[in-house]
Length: 114
Image 1 (spheres, rainbow, N blue to C red):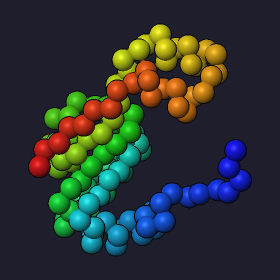
Image 2 (tube, one colour; image 1 turned 90 degrees about the vertical axis):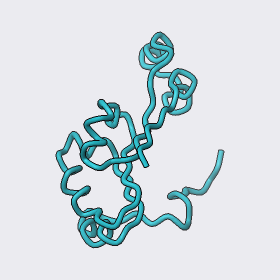
Image 3 (cartoon, rainbow, N blue to C red; image 1 turned 90 degrees about the horizontal axis):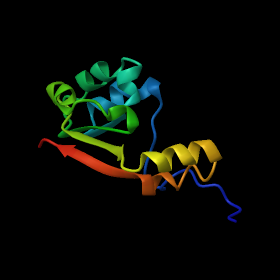
C-alpha cells in the first residue's frame, strides 16, 4: 500500500467556483461534469466559454440525449453505459470493490461534434 497522497497530475490546476468567470472566459478547452445539468449551472458556464474551441461534458450525469447537449454548444460528451447489469447489482449488494470493478461492467463512449 502506498503511503503518500496524490492530488492529481502536477501540471493540472483546479480552480474554485469563485474563479469560474475569469478562468472559463480565457480557456480554449472547458470540461464540466454532467452534475452541472442537475444543479442548473451548465448554461451559465457555457455562456462564459466564448473562446473555447472544445466544450465538453463528462460523467454519469452526462448520459442524456446528445442532441440536447449539442444544441447548447457542447461538442464533446464522455460517459459510460452499463453492459453487465447483474455485475453492477452484484457489486452494490456485496459491497465489493466499487471503484475498479465497475470498469468491467461498463463501457465508455464518446460523442464528438467538432
